[in-house]
Image (cartoon, rainbow, N blue to C red; front, side, top):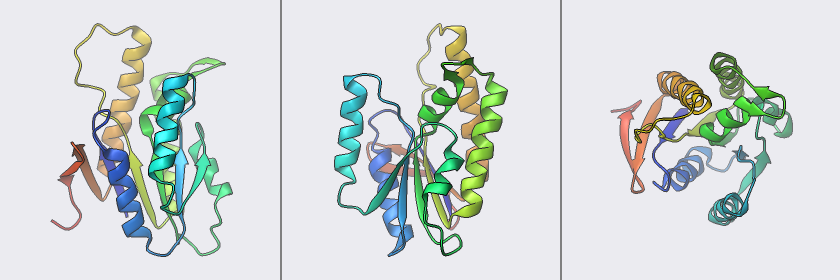
Length: 183
């Protein structure tokens, strides 16, 4: 099962994703693939809140800010595809892959890298829940680099939605299903 959850900042998509991961995993292992890099106190506080939120839920956390397919090497996949992973979140992952110490990658290069890695995850897991952000609502005169980032994220989000079994936009903690396997 592949579920994609999107929504705005503070919409409750993380809690929703964790709940789905718990339900889908049953008694099997569940992994939390964290992509956020901490640059400041605000980021550290966000990570602290997320860790606290999932503290008693039995997730094994894998910090993987880039190349998320490498998380597979850190999982105990003794039984084929017998675990669930929650990838949080694509918007951080895209930024990490695009903007690095080595320079800025093109949107196409980033899209190919991220989608290739996510496909590898999906091929090796029983369940994959992915969280992404809706950052497209504000109308601003963005810098070129930001527009390229948003272009890459938009293309990736559309491709993920196409691949997913189920897609929901989380609004005030409530998933509004846009695509559902069993309607």
